Length: 423
Image (tube, rainbow, N blue to C red; front, side):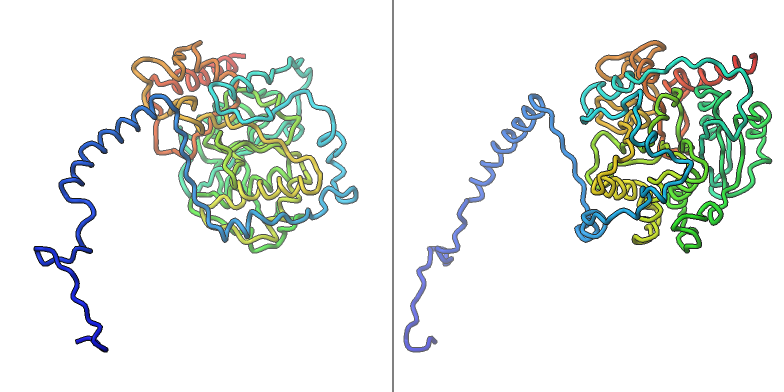
């Protein structure tokens, strides 16, 4: 019963259902729409893919992390001040001096073979042979690292060594394999120690000792590590370059060309051709001189920022990006950023990335744009232009027999080393 006698009966349909609750679309009509709408939608999608090239990239970043780690641009620590720069570091020459080569194109190179062709513009200059022996400590120092507690050093890891000795000048360069344990008993490594006594060395890292004189000296951060060797690996490469200068090369790399034309610059590398907004830089291949103020500033950021997350690139990609932005804010020329394909040609679009090293060659024997996989073919020419192939820790995978890595790289390393042994 209603209050105040204002009750009204609602009109009812024949079935007893309120007219206001009648479905707007009858089931029969709904299924009829689906019958024609689905094929039409499929046709539109097909035509869209046929006439257009869709590019869809999704990445999700925590806004709190962005506001905390990316947005702020703190001032530099003063490592570039005249009174603080090491006497061994010539700012006028290394930062502001003229250079022979240009390693930054000034434009994204996602299309076709643009990046590979740009790598080909960097030419190797003729160097007259040294008339006398160059002492090991005076050579160009290459550094790499293997954590002996994670996996033994075996034939798969040996390929990185072979690639170095087959492509770099063994009369003026030296590769130092650093580790957290003693590798001197390894038979593979003993072979290279005996064969290249001036161009190869094994050393054990002393992280606290290498941090002396930096803002990380005595810090609890020096014991940071993770099961992937990412955090400690990022720390070690910076400490090694600070103390000794030279070039860092990740162990999961195959070198394809002498790096000498690049070494007038200090650099990191582009992560991939997509130029990630917040993590665009990579340290798999990097070069800094001894006591570089760039590294001094990097240690300041590490010492004053949030400790690195386990298994993260906080002391890698994020650190380099923070430093790069701070340098710009202080009107100091930043370090160079090598294009992705110089060392990471696998990290781009499906139509122009290097073929997967761990799957057999296509039955058609073709790469992108119809380029051949044969010796002397299009892929072979590209490998002669770039400087390295980064494999991203896929140690459990093997190279297919007679695949492009086997034919165009591994066999050539062995052949080159045989020739050098004869000499």
